[in-house]
Amino acid sequence: MPLLEIKNLTVSFDTSVGLFKAVDGIDVSVDAREVLAIVGESGSGKSVAMLAVMGLLPSTATVTADKMEFEGLDLLAMSPAEKRKIIGKDIAMIFQEPIASLNPCFTVGFQIEEVLSKHLGLKGRVARQRAVELLHLVGIKDGADRLNAFPHQMSGGQCQRVMIAMAISCNPKLLIADEPTTALDVTIQKQILDLLVRLQAEHGMGLIMITHDMGVVAETADRVIVQYKGHKMEEADVLSLFENPKSNYTRALLSALPENAVGDRLPTVSDFVFEPAPGVA
Amino acid sequence: MSASVLEVRNLTRDYISSGGFLRPAKVVHAVKGVDFSLAKGRTLAVVGESGCGKSTLARMITLIDPPTSGEILIDGKPVDAGHVTHEMRQKVQIVFQNPYGSLNPRQKIGDVLAEPLLLNTKMSAAERRERAMAMLLKVGLGAEHFNRYPHMFSGGQRQRIAIARALMLNPSFLVLDEPVSALDLSVQAQILNLLKDLQDEFGLTYVFISHDLSVVRYIADEVMVMYFGDVVEHGSREDVFGNPQHSYTKTLFAATPKSDVESIRQRIAKKAALAS
Image: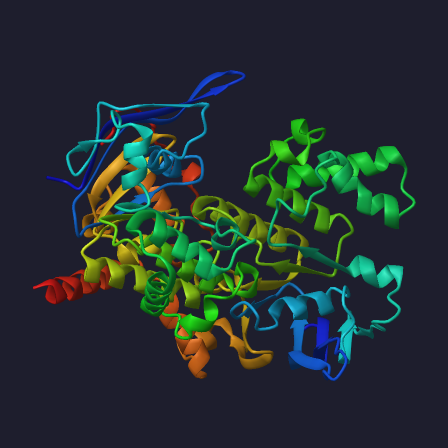
């Protein structure tokens, strides 16, 4: 049984010019111990689909799906109180802007301990001890000192590590990383990706990587879903996707990598003719 | 070799944090002596991680910040950083990283493009309008975009506008401070193509600041690697990419994601070996 199984997910937003479908009939399934990458440009609905799973969309959004199950539990039929027990504990998420997603008014330690007390009931010295362990796990060595730091006193890479520490604090079964390295330098990006992949292997988590960077996909993923304008264009394991892309859109994305430049010009997506037809798998 | 458009000699910049009672002032050496000269029509890429001083260098050569010591020569003429003339200002333009923050949200695109002309030339309104429209078309936008506001554009389109604005005064060289790192892969490719096309058409000279080596390999003629304010490597693209000397350059190469099929196969094999 897959860890997370979604069938025919549609997310639409009510706008002043009518209904806008951000995600249109997408199937996603992730197994435990699997790294799934969802790739697409901005506006392809890759983040929205995962926010729908987390229940973090604004009230203007309508989410429908034939099936949305986590470990056999129906996420759609669940009451908000039941859902809160799972979200943040068994399913955790890391966001793109590490500095913006931490609360600037509280110390890093307070924010990690808050998660521990809400979901695991750890308090006081025990919680503090666990927070230091978590920081150590994500590669912050002087954890005990850094717990008293505010987010603005840390660099972007450090903040992202803190976010990851918070996300894995309750040993989640599924971790969703939404563009975890987009705002970071290459050297830091490498460290964060290595960290995520190591944690995923050590803890046997399922990991969903949302990204627009084919390089990140090549470095981390087992299986890849390519998404364009709310539709799934292609789904394949990582090797066959890079070796032999089926859809024109995937081919376009791959050739837009600067290292694949042929001659003087970079091919862009609009150079390729493709039809974002529904039902393309 | 043609005359250099930009020459920099032993440029340094220190930032001094204000001290307090019983607390001495702290000096940060952001840039510790940079030398280079750049010929017309060439692209110099400055590579390094955040905090290595590459943006400080950019601010100095665009004459925004005065250097602590050292000389800047533009078109062979030395620049007095304390007193920058109008004429010198026009020769240098910059495009910033974040296209969302660098355009005034209350200014129409036509006005954004015409403003440099309004401030620096005595052209008539009609002439300014005509020039702005021509530049708008040149960077791949349409005439219908002239009267729109920045929020109506996507990130890639905004970066096109920022580039168009920088080119309005026919600058001698253009500083591009991470122009594509906030953009999607395919939009990034469009902007890089645009930069190349404009360079071919106008013989532009670029100083391209980036931390993305795959972009640098595509666009640069010369590469300069900075690390904690020092230039650790400087050479032609072929030299730096083909035979990196400094350990930091090698670290950078190792950190760049590899997307060829062979390295994916290796990674999967390694993972399978670990799991079993």
